[in-house]
Image: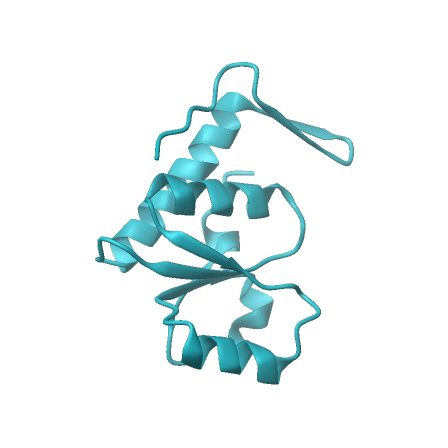
Length: 117
């Protein structure tokens, strides 16, 4: 799968506008981190993020690598998350550091350490 972020691409979130160069930089940073931790041709990556530009960056990064993303709502009960982790062959989780206690026994990336902005 190939996709391009052209110079007309923008994300508007609240009162901030994110330009194409910034989007590319964040997508590449997240993709690099995922690829360095998951050394597979195909991976299932669970996304547990709030609805911010970081969610979009993460989805694009996963797609760029040719991986599958598994979106999980922030309202999902812990028991359901545990069930998904055990039965969905999840190779990695992308989340916020404040949720680190929800995810044990799986590779986790915290987006706070990856974002440029």
